[in-house]
Image 1 (spheres, rainbow, N blue to C red):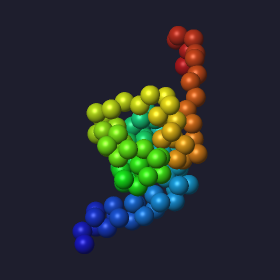
Image 2 (image 1 turned 90 degrees about the vertical axis):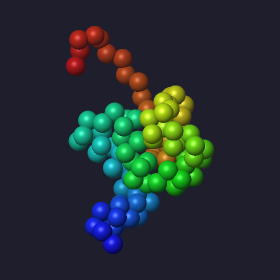
Image 3 (image 1 turned 30 degrees about the vertical axis):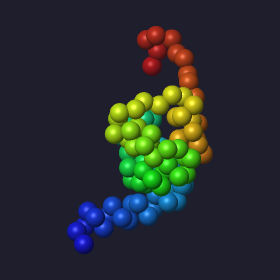
Image 4 (image 1 turned 90 degrees about the horizontal axis):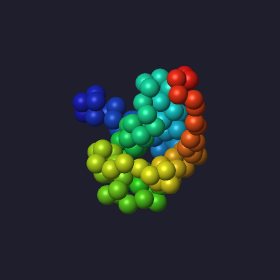
Length: 99
């Protein structure tokens, strides 16, 4: 078995641990400056679309379209997806020019 295929299987197995998956999601945002959507796409790919869909109680077709970039998420759906990781979104308004 090629190393990459073996490693992909290893990561998919690790992603069954939702604490590990949450850490992966947060790391994507903090260390790689991914947006929450990019981090979700990356994490869902690692977990497997069907596996994530089952956990999120979402249609596989909708999750797949989101992962491909063909679909954007409304806040309600974003929070539904984040809830798999025991997370939720929060909107913060700051003054223009503020960091």
